[in-house]
Image: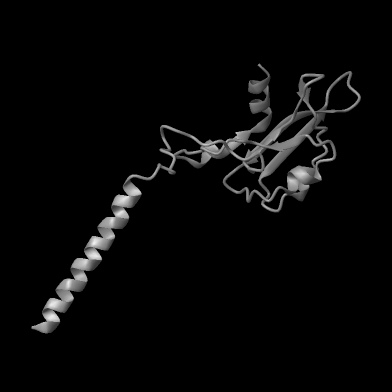
Length: 147
């Protein structure tokens, strides 16, 4: 009988201590961000998928179609194609695709680019129902940003 009341006392004491912790937390300021309604600022060091850098002087891309990013990618998720257009001295970028489903976000492509033509995107809220939604045409995205 003595053990019964001892356990009852210990359980009651534990309940009161727990309610005290709960009441204390109830009146403290909220630290959690209410995600769908609020979004926090992303750190500048965030590594999203890659994007082409827009040259502000010429209003075009800096990429010279050398293919170094494609060659250095360990995940084989970048496809670059350049063609020499009539009347131009150098290659023009025709195709720049990224398969983000394969990308390991290692950053090798950004580091190896000789013209610093690639940067990390600040997009972090990517969600879709199909894999095809994560196959990005980076050149097309740059054209949309230019407009």
